Image 1 (cartoon, helix red, strand yellow):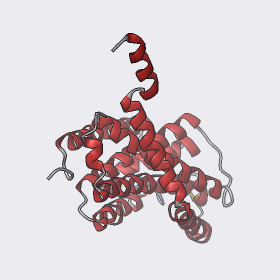
Image 2: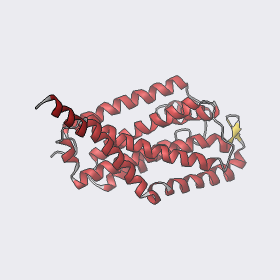
Image 3: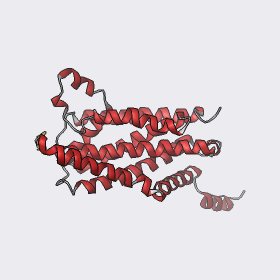
Image 4: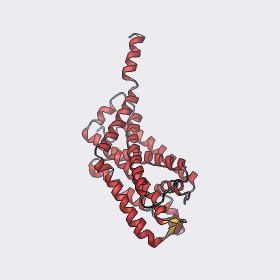
Length: 268
């Protein structure tokens, strides 16, 4: 093949990994935007109910927490709750759907890398999480005055969190054998951890023993780091929170890539 023909083919087809990545991302975004009534409206309604019940009704009795109005105090945690759930569910359900439809096998035998497949799904999960996070943030402004203390912390924590839980959702999708398995972890693991992760209270209120136990909860670091970005207060050292987030993201990423390389849950 002449150099000229090679240049034409390269221009026409491009890098297969980059083309595959773009295709997966576009497919994922189209998937959750096409069914926006199912993917965007329910989180908005759920968070609105949280704002009304916990913020307005119960918040009046509680008064202040951490030096802030209770509604303002819980808003960062509720935003992160929606980000965590959206990113996790988007990737776990989408990847399991690919397994169920048996077209993930075609991707695995194609010339694209396993990391490209993973990054494509994770980017789709991050996109949905950011969409939902922005919607919930806008809704929160109808209930409390929202200001940003540190924009870098707000953006970086939201992206890191959505990446981490997208990868965890991917791992769930790899091991899931039915659609019930996809919803098992969010209902029985994520929801309890979120409620105990400092969304509605400060761990300074807990006895020393239970405060120590609470620090084993990864969501505690997510919520407090994001709360620092919004309000400027945190129960956890910001450096420690970033360290936990980045280390957990790196570990889960390596695990997910290895699972794809081994064909776990896909190849029999």
